[in-house]
Length: 200
Ligand SMILES: [Zn+2]
Image (tube, rainbow, N blue to C red; front, top):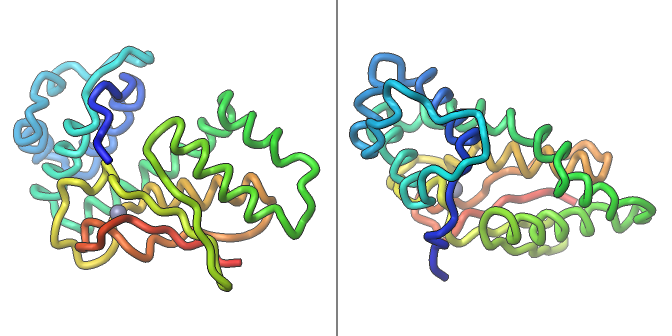
């Protein structure tokens, strides 16, 4: 599987990511930008619009630089905060509304499975190829080329906290159930893919 090089991060999203990184890195922010090759944003953040900015590999380099400069805990803190801002906007937008509409009338016993498959389908279309799997205990979302941790290595525990929060929030909104997603395998820890578990 190859990364889609034509995919670019919308300006408004990059703006949110950079302000989150600035918040946790403080005086080291310029060092992160410099290491990521993004000094052009030091004085002027991206505009609040949908214009295309950096590529996915550049985004991975930005997360990698953040990790190298401030370490695992603060990077996870940034990703957690960032992830909390995403679900509401996503659910209010056209893709989120379509997902909610497709959940209408799905019987209770099928809601979780349907929601997880819908997340995988929508995610593959919008963000990155992902797969829904299941066993007796849980459903799983599996991502082979995670842009968040592509340039992060040797983490002690899974680091894609934003995705963890994001998928959990989507699954809660789609099913109406109280549940969470937990990242049980992560490429940043050396696993072949990032894998999120949603218990049945
Ligand atoms: Zn991960």
